[in-house]
Length: 261
Length: 248
Image 1: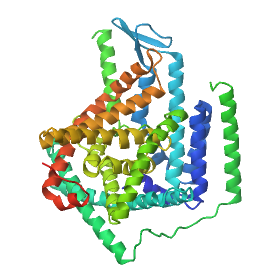
Image 2 (image 1 turned 30 degrees about the vertical axis):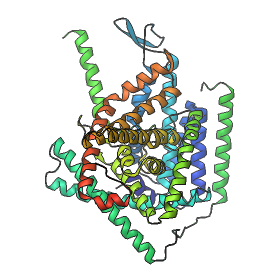
Image 3 (image 1 turned 135 degrees about the vertical axis):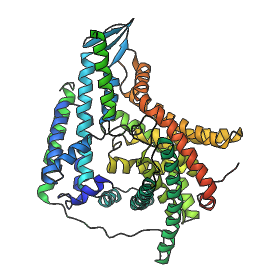
């Protein structure tokens, strides 16, 4: 049902040490937004793209489709950044509408392009993490980072229950569709509300049953799950360290030179 | 056709194609990598007091009643699923609910802040809505500002003895609008306009997102009302178990 979650279990990089992958994507992500430069963005996009598609064997068409998910936001907000309405025209383009100009500056355009590249590169970092690491492994990494146990337990249960509830919701929607429940906007709205409230009632019932089942198995406040650990290979650690060092050196150089690249 | 008319038709076509192909208008999640580092950190720090309060409250509730844990987990999953489902929208395009209003009314704003940040992490990782670097900003707009205002409106309307349906509708849609305004302000603070500064930029961002967000607020209000009415008539014991008191 959730395509990213499905794909990450097929990834060939799934059994690589999760801490490694987590550190790699978070560090690269930080480098991206620290530098905000087109060069770094293209480099990161290529590296994470190659890693995900060639090493992880995620289908390229899927990857491109996933990269297009935030495109509406990107398009709309970048448009808002480089289009201005003012009384004086700026240097890149200007259309006059009465006494005002719809206008933009060269610097603004450049800034917009920079932002699009950075954002896409950052999304590719996020995808590197989420398309190659199952959620349970990410939770294990968070445990090593000393996130409170209560939050982790809540996250584990929520993760599990997302699928249970989605299943309920899709079953109800299918039966509503077969009874023409979504034939026009007003019935669709009614059906959606009916579906949401019955899902709510069912999920509360499920949560009670879950607690009873846990208690019957001597639940005392912590859920213990067997965590599989895949040891990190020295070659992987060295290559990640080398890549990040080079990346951060480049970031420092770009920041010192004024950040125009 | 004159040259001007042709240009107008071209512009309208481009506009309609741009909106026609848009896969789904997400709620206003700021995407990964869109905010500069300083803003990411600043919004994150601003969220901390709310999150710590929420965490303390959560711990206290769980200390009194362990059973609440599975209930809270279910609630979190419920908010996630509701906000990931496509809803029938006025304009015909598909969009998602934010679920902030519903969450605040059902579970109260404090526990929604903790559930909200967990839901946002899952949305970033599993659906690529939002991101890890923009988590702070998104948490502030969707898990803190939206629910708190929603809850405030709800409490205020209840005090004024307004019609029950109107109360829920106002709480949900105003909560949605607040989320949209806060996100616009967040974006504008990070990217002030070259001609006119932050305020002009706020207006620009508000304008650009208005076509998707304004209908969404209305739909969200209608749906939340219908859901709450449904629940109040069919699920009284369940509502009581999550601490929801109906005072009509």
